Length: 262
Ligand SMILES: C[S@@+](CC[C@H](N)C(=O)[O-])C[C@H]1O[C@@H](n2cnc3c(N)ncnc32)[C@H](O)[C@@H]1O
Image: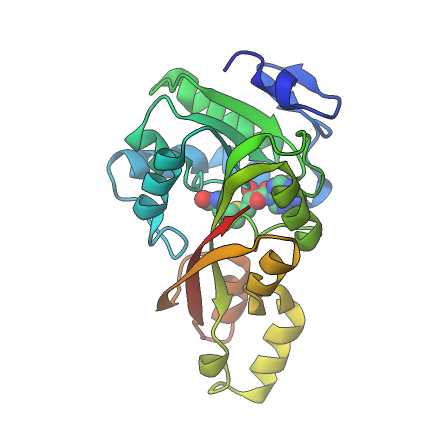
């Protein structure tokens, strides 16, 4: 993917060890603890090992194979947002086409550094670029990206999700697709729990009650295929689940896979 980022970039950047930095190289202070754990416990490598043996899976990847097929069929430049530990849809896409043109991106430099280390040690996909960026200020020209894929990348945006959604719409080409897999807390189930717990969770994790479908329409996607998935009691480690565990509770989540077409 020679010079892809140079051609696509509308903002200044630095390249260090083959990674494009559109924001500062330092980890954000609130990410410090997480990134230390990520490195010391080789968490990304652990996820990749599971991917290789087809054993990786969680509440966000229920329909990942289906989405990956759609991504490959569409083709072009794929921007994986909030790549994180599990890599979002990227590993599923690479399994179908090892030469897919993917930009692995995250706000957290360590995520990009670790994925790059793995792919330089083994697997060697040919057309991967690594970019440390903020979804709320994407460094790409208008209408320059074919697919934006997100496996929990939207619901987990730390800052302004609406600003990020507007950016996704701006940088996608006409006909381009924002493919998003996400979850929200199931209200019906929550209403069976104590009022005290309901109030606490609503106060602490208010964003987890929205599935952002209305907001996807609001930013300009006019054709949206929204597939409601299974409702699942989730026990995997996450900030919400860790919080609920203190009360001996596991929440029921709604899941969705969404194709937002520009
Ligand atoms: C929980 S992960 C999403 C799951 C991940 N796709 C996976 O498969 O494991 C969320 C990721 O989004 C990143 N992130 C949060 N806010 C962001 C932002 N404003 N811009 C870019 N990435 C962001 C975090 O650093 C984190 O790696």
